[in-house]
Amino acid sequence: MARTFIRIPAEAKPGEIVEVKAMIEHPQHSGFRLDHVGKPIPRHIVTTFTCSYAGKEVFRADFHPSVATNPYVAFFVRATAAAEFELTWIDDRGTVVKERTTLNVA
Image (cartoon, rainbow, N blue to C red; front, side):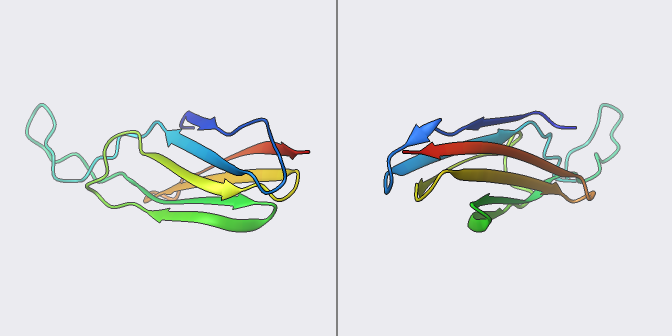
């Protein structure tokens, strides 16, 4: 299981714009590099990242082999109600990593 790092404010006012920052530790092997004995390192990349807020998808990114190790994304969301964020990373080997965190709106 990959480690993730998520930064979302603990609370916000209704209508406030909040920044969501997320990173996953992942090697992002493109399939073009060689190991120490000259064999190709098999491709292994995160292909999709999604973020849902209150059950609705608010952000999606599709990654390609040129994305650096430990992909990082930052984006903004308008806080409408106290609800849960669900962040999901999927790699090309079928591994799914999901993290949840709650934003309190008052």
